[in-house]
Image (cartoon, rainbow, N blue to C red; front, side, top):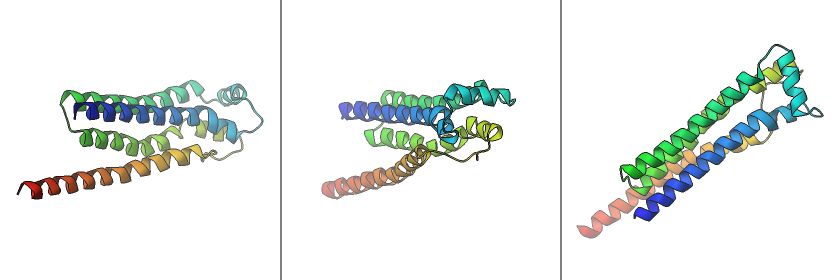
Length: 164
């Protein structure tokens, strides 16, 4: 059972880190490039800064948002392993972090995307499919929490009946 906990904790951290990396990549690179086709990322950043916005603050905001998710994922794994929580509990913690990632995805789009929209004649909405992938991942994680909890409940009831 100990090895399973380590595998679940490691996989959970890995998925949370991948989610955070895609969130940052989308918010800081992919979405701006899709919003202003034909411009380089350096040109977009210069134009946004010249319009009176701060791309430095945007980058820091997205990095902090993504970093909080990574810290929550690592913290959940460490706490779960130190406290010797069951693998299912560790999985639910990581699924919860991924589900909350929808809020982080939404928040991250308020940084550079809105500054790009203020600097160019484009909307502040998502311009790539990657935001949808992140939201879909969060929704899947939310459903996954229910699946893991129901599976655990069924397993517990079966064990209780077998010992009764």
